[in-house]
Image 1 (tube, rainbow, N blue to C red):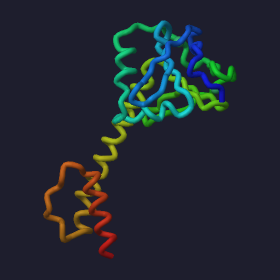
Image 2: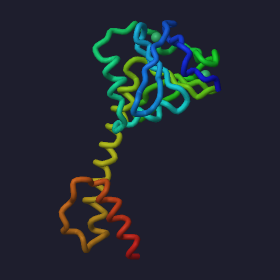
Image 3: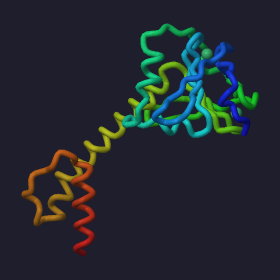
Image 4: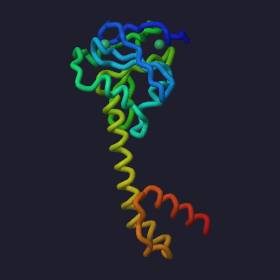
Length: 172
Ligand SMILES: [Zn+2]
Ligand SMILES: [Zn+2]
């Protein structure tokens, strides 16, 4: 894979030169289309450091917050600015967001707003899982476990669920 850390990249969506932004926490540079469409280009695996709700994307969010970006056609085929091959559309996160992925170098391009949507979609998903576990816990597992049925529920149903499940099987 070509090393693009020094090279200015051309935005695959709007053709503007992207700006390198150092994210000290993650120790990486990402490329943001600040003068054009607001898209974000992540090298191979860089996105993995920002797509979960608990990960710190504050610096990226601050840079793009409140700016007006050029509107681009999101359905169009983009070309990887490193490899110059067509990128493929892929679903990312729980929110059904479509991002562009380069199958040659593994880079990913997100249109403006998509990072936020991925992060929020995952957050919503986690909330849903917790609600599900809580219901399951209240309605089924408590009676299965029996002896702990009167114990008050702690603040994290997820932790409670797995703790009780583990205890249940350890006793079998
Ligand atoms: Zn752009
Ligand atoms: Zn590529």
